[in-house]
Figure 1 (cartoon, rainbow, N blue to C red):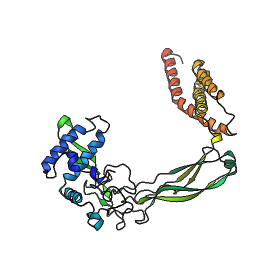
Figure 2 (figure 1 turned 30 degrees about the horizontal axis):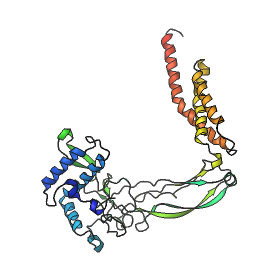
Figure 3 (figure 1 turned 45 degrees about the vertical axis):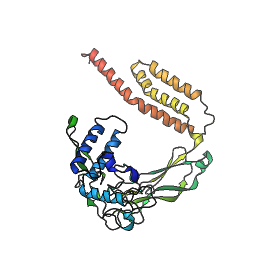
Figure 4 (figure 1 turned 135 degrees about the horizontal axis):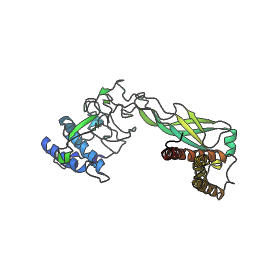
Amino acid sequence: MAGFNDKDYYAVLEVSEEASAEEIRKAFQKKAVKLHPDVNKEPDAEERFKEVSEAYAVLSDPDKRARYDAMRKNPYAAAAGGAPAGYGRYNPSTSDPFAGFGFPFGGAWTGARTSTTRSRSYNPKAGADFVYTLTLDEHDAAQGVRRGITYQHYAPCPDCEGRGSKTSEHPQTCSMCSGSGHITVDIGTFMGIGVINVVCPECEGSGRVVAEPCSSCGGSGRVISASEMVVEVPAGSHDGDVVRMEGKGNAGTNGSEAGDFVCRIAVPTEQLDTRQAGGFRAIGFALPFLGLALLNGWGYVFPALFIALGVFLVATSNLRGRGRYWWRNAGLAVLSGLSGSLPFVVMFAVMSMCTAAWRFPYVH
């Protein structure tokens, strides 16, 4: 998130602090036309366009501009209780004096919501799975083990119990976009762009906002936390096997369900290197073509070359260092190659039948 010195909206639009609403509108139109992604193909054009849009959204609104000007004069007012209603408190532990606030004081246009982001967006989403790779030797995988794991993940905020607000259980309709999730910005008619719709920076497109966001989680309903987990790896496990624990992954936003804790078993002695995996995939890719050639009596050269290539790659690699169950990953590689070739085989088969029907239209 940008720091306080990087959030000079007047400098972004290149206008004075005494600029009128009309001057601000014209300055935004001029910059937006130059930076719009449909016109400007520079790598940072989209980010700069979002920045000027954010600046215009603040300075074009009298109330937001007044709050912004007040904060510029006294950025620590919120610490003494001077924050506007509906916004969080200033957090001295962060480098951004606006980090304790929702839009327009930081947090706008960001894709990910973290525990330090003060977004008022009410956007319930299920938490993602937390994937952990546990490396075992062949003996432990065969016998089965119990392993304690400490991991960091999103957990429900203890202060607001995951809701996002300590005082209200119900979200509010976003006042900036009236619940539509988008705001309309007029950037003039230059090059036919005219009026455009952008995602509302206040609700991030959801149309709803958290009433009085929790200062601990910023309204998301979750915070980063460390947890401990005991994973029971069953006997007879192999490389690529998965142990899943439901609801132990990342917490969802605004009270949504949590993802799962997914422990992937890795057994290095059962894994194939890139050369070996490529060889088995080449063999699998050729098998359907070989079957088609046997049925039609043509096209043996292509599958034979692929099979020869696969055998060469496998034969010239070192399989002696692999464990007893390397063939499991070899079989998966063959299946991967086979699935990749099936669409081509079907296409060739259809073309072959169409060609035969065209050559002999009256043969029954």
